[in-house]
Image (cartoon, rainbow, N blue to C red; front, top):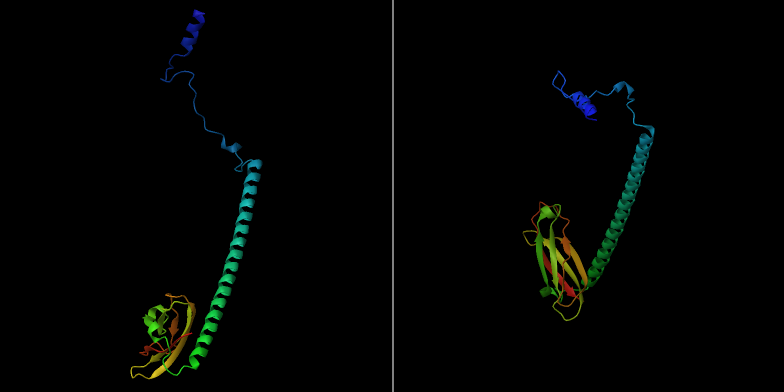
Length: 194
């Protein structure tokens, strides 16, 4: 046994080049054996994943388009509803004001504040603040005249607010259709609480 151990030790000695005998040497792979394509099972799985991802993306895109269309339709419906409501409120306000020959019973409940034209697309506009000081809800009709610097009325706007709560307020906006380059002064000429 001791003799065989000596032979083994002798075989593990140094080589003349200075490297340990029996140490492995790295050999480069034979690249001619590579096809450049992954194995067919991997390729099939990759194609399946790509197809699934593509289908999911198409489904998500269709769902996003459908959601956007639905949102757009709801926004249009809401806008039409608001516009119809405003139109009905404005018609009612005009009807209430048509029989008023003086300034009305609510002049003290109204204040107006100009809106900068850069915020209105160049239109003359005022926020009509209606403050209901009464103990019950009330509706209001307000006529704002836009006058020139000589005091002559060049445009009028009628706004209304229905069911303004007791001690509450509403803030409709009155617009003039006159050109932006004209200097106009807004004046509340009629205000009725009904």
